[in-house]
Image 1 (cartoon, rainbow, N blue to C red):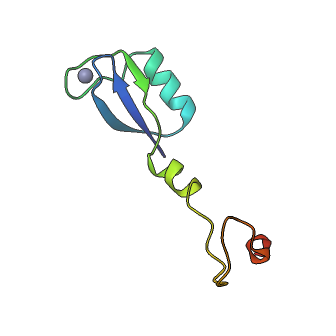
Image 2 (cartoon, helix red, strand yellow; image 1 turned 90 degrees about the vertical axis):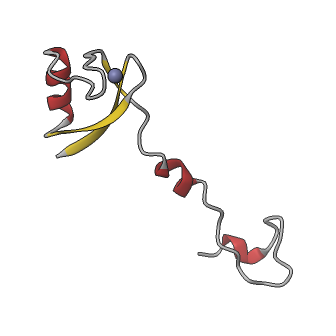
Image 3 (spheres, rainbow, N blue to C red; image 1 turned 180 degrees about the horizontal axis):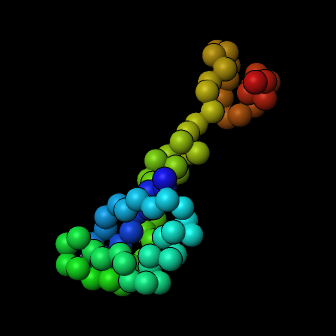
Length: 79
Ligand SMILES: [Zn+2]
């Protein structure tokens, strides 16, 4: 199962479960998906989970050296 964040042409967003991405395409083509708020069948995929960008932008952990800063610390390249 896969969940998609969907949005109707009136900007109502909602989540809908599908068995696969192809299942979404099939249901969209046959207009089987309707907005639960207004019943609109002009459905598009909304932007995906907001948490994705956050974790990618997380700052690198500090190395703990007293002089560490500005990425110049030699420890910053060590993982
Ligand atoms: Zn709607």
